Length: 156
Length: 366
Image (cartoon, rainbow over all chains, first blue to last red; front, side):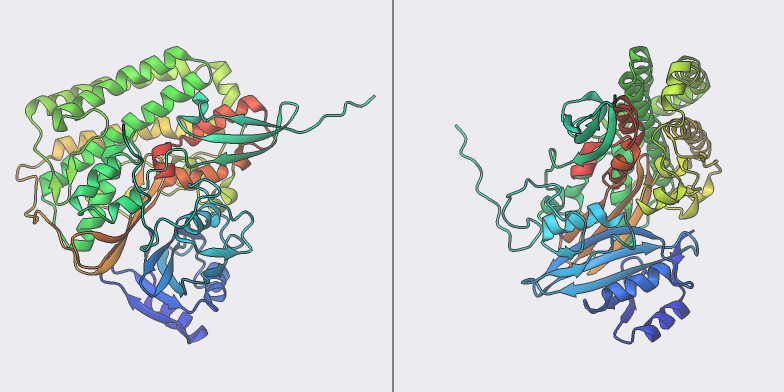
């Protein structure tokens, strides 16, 4: 049974990475830790492999377009320890790039391709970072807020 | 003399029956042995996540019908519960029971399509006819409840659309009474068929460790021997009030994925029976404003769908429309295993592997 991660573990994690910010979010009470982009891989690697965390399952990976940044969200679970946690990081829109986590969770392969395709976040080191839902050669990233829909084709 | 073979490429689909609609699998073949299998997606992409950003919360429900259209009730339920969590809405007791009844009937209907499609994919037309015939009875019940036979729009934020009548309850009880005989028929016709058994046994194996690494969920994961079921482990709604077994496989071959779903149908029938027995009287809809404005915040809610773990990630900015709407679709994630399932097998096994993965492309392409 996956329950929200123990506060003591969150404090331990913040002790390891003092740049982290942790908060319980209002909507579902899940703890969210926010990491700077240059540290996100180290944080995720610790969560994946280190003993008190053992987050062995990547539940979901996606991104949100805010006016000033792109926020990438990872929802993690531990089948071994039975807890869950969300991790976030923000990247600038112009050069949105993060290291891939396919080495930590092979499950991330499709989710990272989708996030790249629809939101334009580049995952460096991904084995095959190509568009997944849209055709090759499609211009733009439709889930960005500034993406304008192409005009409807004229009907006869 | 040695025979020299050359690897060649074969496109399977998008119209092949084994791909259940619009999926292309690019096969690299050495003779008839699969060297690699690459799924190519996107033929059905409608941009539901983008559309949702310009619709009110209630207006999004019909889009969720069209995700996993073989289990629309379950998908509705996941979405409505996510919004209820976000906006803190209490659902009346009777509605909770009706939701469980619909979701579990939906699971049976969905697994019947799986059974039908694996039967016809492996050449058994009769098996398909029987499964469709029995699924029809569930569709009749859904028709009586909400007036739709496919893209059901019954579950609402705060409850369900309308109460069910005696005819529905009687029909559901009759279906449950007939269900053991229906299952016996399938086991006699399909499970007991030697050709079917040997086509599935020991082929397309994904073991425990790889299944977890690839992020498989639902029956595909349980078939690999991982005992997880969100209905039991992280109960949503009122699932903690029902007792049911979680069928688990041994090695994660095609046969395990088949038999796990067959056993799940029986468990679902038992849950429906328990819910019908305990169905309380009362209202079926909470007082919810017509135009919902959830407070700013985020929610990630996941439910156990027939195809695995369905998650809704919703970001609210306090307005009438979600700021960001993301769906974690089990079929999408499960397709990541196609390459591993097919590699080293024969071309004919690709069809069986796709059938036991049971992807629904409406959900894959979102």
